[in-house]
Image (tube, rainbow, N blue to C red; front, side, top):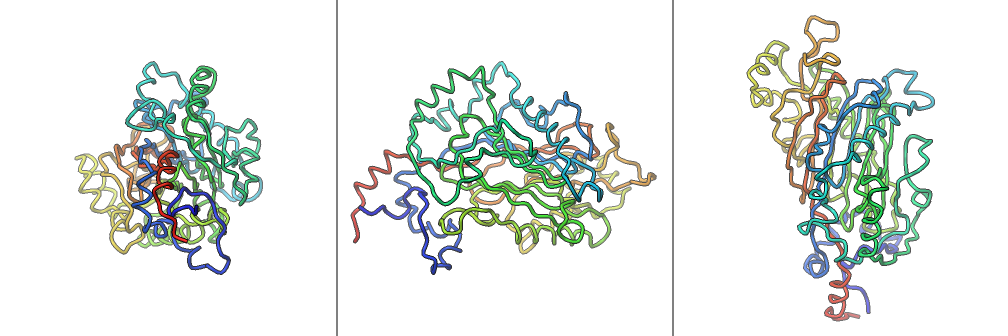
Length: 442
């Protein structure tokens, strides 16, 4: 019996001549099969915490506490954490061997923060234990052999994948997994193994993106790919640019983009930032085999997208007027002069993207280790601005919180956004039932 249209995303070989079909976005190709898919796809939710922090080229102390930034009062299932200026953005650091020492320090801090013992953590077991979310014992999921695991050797300091994941290509041998058995094993060794593991990390000069997931969720993630785009000096050096990660979680494609855009608060500097964004969209390409239909190649091919970073958009206000509104906590008045607000409009750079309401002070520019903005009288004086932002694109994401953390380590304040994201889960028993009820059309 031929599989009905909309069956699970088992990779299939495409007709080399069918370039038009191959180029079509996946979400358009499956529109005609949504009714059938509903017969064997369940929709569940994942909690995602996205964070961005420009750390001012300072290597952190090993005991830096970032719990506030990670919103650990209610732990997430996925943490996508972006850093900017992890190293000085000078010529010596941009050309030659990449300095990965600060990245190693940040990964240690993240690991310690996420795996810190929490007395009440049992009530926050989103992925495994909450009946309102995933219950893995209900599903038998088909998975790719090229699964990811926590790397035990991170000597490259950049891309952390198992060798099997690095070498996985177009050949996908799918086997069902007994998740009920798997969960019971995880429960027995929970005390010995960290609850969160690093899925992937990638550094491009000062831009660094690190994605961490619950260990119980890790087995449901596949097709992890990375794309880096430099848009800085000469248009391609990585002092400015993006690191993007693509992945499939169950049956849903996610993309996380961490960027550092062009600086400057002179009139017209926002046009440089807009150009950076256009270049990132144009040049970001994921290494999924083009002959396998359904795997995203570009950012907008994904169903759930989160864009974070030091976007560097400024306020079209004088230093004095900005401080006057800040002293009144008139965030709406400030936001009316925000450059990114305009770019979120129809027909502009971020048309269709969504940002949460801003109810916190501008995140830049502070004196280091201080609660004071840099004085206008100093050489490095800057008008305060919300440079650090987090946006989302696509249906199926619901913003729960959008805030900054009061960590004084840098001249920027870190920002985090927490989302609930819909994830489509293939249910094997429902699919078998759909096969028996679908008439064959030969």
